[in-house]
Length: 479
Image (tube, rainbow, N blue to C red; front, side, top):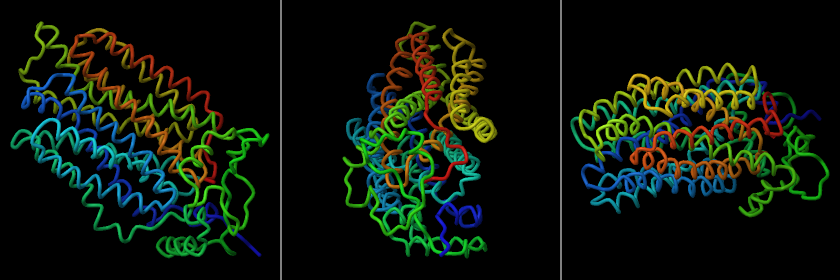
């Protein structure tokens, strides 16, 4: 009897109208997440001015959001692996929307900090959107479509910069918080028509449900399914004593009927998933991914904060004052708006390189180039040069981060994909927690050289780690 796998079916049907609809829905999730994170660079200075808080308290407001994202990334990843991708999407969206609107009503600094921490927990589920989308994309053009998907993140950063420019000039930061929560709210009315991932359904031995989803894709795309019945490409078994090397386990394995129990079934807990991620088969990939996610988060979110802090710090340190208001508000929105557009060339470059050089080489090339752009900022530069250098650095950081978000789901099997990517994303949030202390704290203390050197060291180490990844996933099926 003829058989086919999910990868065979997706390859036969190609990327069509169905995947385009999934792209738009998942992309809106990333728009919402990027807007919530870009918000931090605008709210901090406004809160400091209104409530007279210190620079340390200002940086702490950003750090608690990333702390919440650390918890949320682990939690929502486990939920989506155990209860389904749709369940993870729904509850993370509900949580982010509710806490976002409520935080706009915060009566004081401590209340705002607590509510933004809860927003961070909700936003921590953003990686589920990317994993869910990638599980519908054929292997042959997965890299290209992940880059297209990442344009939604850039759209969110540009929208938030534009929104802040308009709202803050006429209203206040509370309205900015409320408007920023709107895109996430808009996802809820359309949740009922979102499909479950057929890969997840196969991993749970729900073959009939997976077949129905594939038939729905076939009908929407007006493309035929392969002949035969659906089978499942089994994931990696948790076997600490297995002599097979890591690369062998990462390659596609023999297809088997999905009547067998998967090693990571819904009965398995988070501890079993963690044991699988740190098993002999995946340990090297997992540990390197953790560090590279940490470094990329540190660099990307640090660059976002540098945009709003560097020019201000230069003026303050040059004048000998702790803080100078001057005309910085208009300059802040202008600089942030300009550097947000830097992500577009970064995505275009990564789109070309990712299918030409592969995932690993693209990441380390972009990280080293980012170091090159940041180098001159060790010394004080004019505002034009500072904006231009940050433009180039942010383009490279965005490109590298995008390829990393593509690479990580490709490394892990379906049974632990969301958990693996979720934990790696959570480790990355530690970089988000630490970077405000460097981007805000050190700059406010007039230690620009030391702050930039920290960024340079982290980026160089991340580039080396990318070289050490054990496998190239370009063109490989998602198990």
